[in-house]
Image 1 (cartoon, one colour):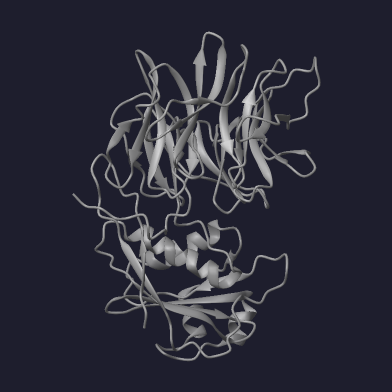
Image 2: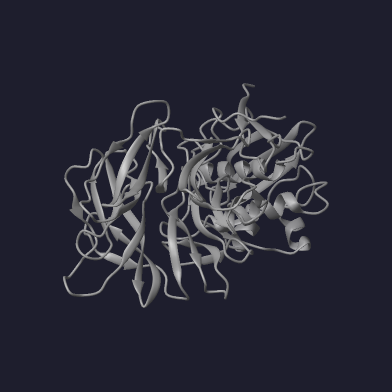
Length: 441
């Protein structure tokens, strides 16, 4: 049985935590000829039942996986009482009563069994009455970051069922009271990753190894990079202290694109991480050009510019050429757009628009028709999840400014944070990359 290590990282406060590692292996008992992928009605949210886990006395394993599958917005989690659940699988090792499972509306059944080395997970296609797929995960609840490792199990279940990995094993960086913080995608395990004040505008490295952000000081703002594996912060020396805002990584991770202010406006500037002078990408001639966001292929950049008289969303080629206005603009009609974020599938750009108060919009780049996504309270600073479906944003709908997550397909929203003043969120890439190492002090 060939093992493949899953390394989960980003377990840093000011010092480094040891991250949990999950390993998995293809289950060799899977029957030959099993067709991968769940069978269910197209356009529906197939029901899923997660069976109780033996010796999981606080039921946390089951509850976390259920919540992950629910938050994916691809499935409908079916909650049943213990007596009913025991009837689905009468005894340990007993046969599953697939006709009865189907009567409760389930298309997918999940069974998790603790082993001496971890957790065996099996997913069953209820309609076919057969095993969809199963794997053994090396898993240890004594690890400090075991919850994050379990999110990887949930994501793999989605991979089996839908052919696309979930986003439970991701994190969201944000600013609160001048500190930079990180929270798991389900709202658990919030931790501060900077100790000072004045942090602004975090953005993730393409593989999640580090975060770049700005720090406000007496001499202006400087760009810093935090290694989330070690907790060490360094100033990006190629970027001089001044007005430097909204930094992001170039898709390859070799340079940082940011907005640099002078007495003649604000322009987008590209600075290498190792050497070489920064290169100006835009020529503002007295206007402000800020908040860049790369397209997934790195060939284009979305950004905000006031060249039309009011801030609007533009796109241009990565070298600064071929500038195009994206958001509809009528001269003389007051409008304000800001904080663009290019979706991971490349199809749309999310942004905030002031309509009395701020609301989150998205614009499809094929038809250029804006779509309003929020209306309750004031909503700002959208950031896409890796699935190109969910968005995290700042909202006042609960009274205080908090981070909320929106499913752009169904319109379902859920509150992520519970600390007043959370803002400027940035959603990480999927953090199950073996290249992202785990470190301890």
